Image 1 (cartoon, rainbow, N blue to C red):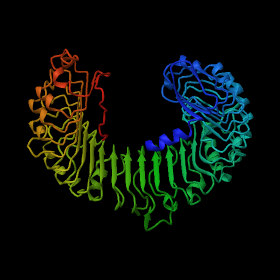
Image 2 (tube, helix red, strand yellow; image 1 turned 180 degrees about the vertical axis):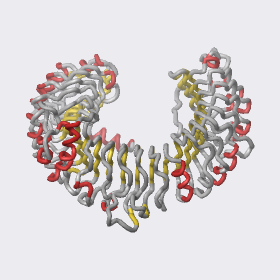
Image 3 (cartoon, rainbow, N blue to C red; image 1 turned 45 degrees about the vertical axis):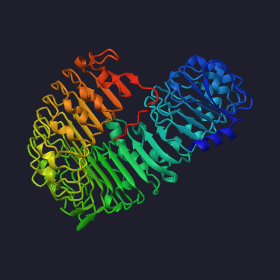
Image 4 (tube, rainbow, N blue to C red; image 1 turned 90 degrees about the horizontal axis):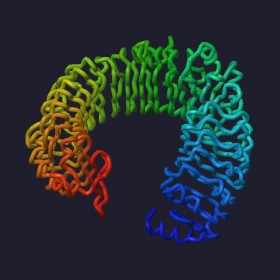
Length: 626
């Protein structure tokens, strides 16, 4: 909000709204209806007085220090309609909350509460109850069904909750219930969903607890819920024979409305996906995720889902082919709407079509393939811009040489690769970002980098046999370079024209580097420099002061670094300096007393081993985020 509008709003609301910083006893003016509190000490809360006509109360800054809300304070606000004590450290909700008979909105999200008092079920006017990420919450009150006006109940992130209370289906006013947990015996059953007209997103967890046949699952009436846009069906992680036998029937009975936009199926133990997914019933589906459906051999007929844009397949061990080919399948399989595709954990994936059909993704922009060791070729990808190939067959990487449209390319996990395949990068002249990581035997880039004249970002990580980066000399547009875990690296690029556009440089875990190359002094655009865990680096060069654009610098875990150069004084634009785990250097950096302190005292923000030892008055940290 513009400051003038803020001032106007403050003026207009002056008689009804108040933001208060509580440090001593505070008298709340009688006309105040809406109060937000900045409270830095828990004891200060008891100083709030005369709040009987308040309609809304919210904690702002300092809430992490609030571990208790007293009954006395709650009882002083009996007209309250809205109470927000989210992100505080309270472990118990006062029973007196149940006396706030006018309360419509209660937010306890991100607190440490383990259970809610039964008195909360007396809040007959409550419309919204938010319990997001209450990680210690183990149980909801048994009489929650008495909250007949409740419209919104959110328990996302309450991972210790194993069930919802019985009778949750009696909350006929409920419109949003993002998570429904099927109980074993005493908790809510799948049938509790029948009469709820839910909107938006619905996750049904613990489907293993649904016992019976198709009819039992149909009691949820998901097909009738026209306002559900996103559905997540989650079985338990644990597998057993009985649940495996029932899984097919249960999934079949959970048929959603045909207008569904987003569907995820997780930990499914059945041998085949439900019929309503295998055909074109979900013609409006935009996003589909199939996670750990380990026994399913066939994928749906994805080319028939004419609205599908995002597809994620993860942990489908038994699947051998991407296309669901039949005896009548012929010609080209076109996935014309798909924009993003992720394939992960598919150890038996052999190819795209069992009938050797041509498979095309004419408008696919992003493709990620991880841990598919038997897949050896890519389909037609005329529009692909982002490609990630991770822990796959070398032949799959080679098949990407024909792609010319890439903007971002990630190559990872090719443990036996010694040289980059011939022609891998030469056709990728549009490439802006390249990452090569976890290639344990890679020794050289085979001259492939020289053609990347528009490359802006390069990351090389965990390639321990790389010894030099001489090929970087031609990367005129590079502005971000990260080199990490290259244990045998002994030299960096030399030459006055090398990497002159570089703005960000990170060098980490390269134990054989003993000195920074002289060519670095010509990096007049360098804005951010991170040097981490270079244990043999003893000193920084005298020319260091030539890095006139430097704004941020980190030196971490360089155990043998002895001192800083005198030229550090010339880095007048340096705003932030962090030094951590450099014991020999730290002995010279005592504030106002260390031998090297005069070299850095002009830097506004300095951290040594964590805490700031200097934050100059009147200075504001304004370092650009990469």
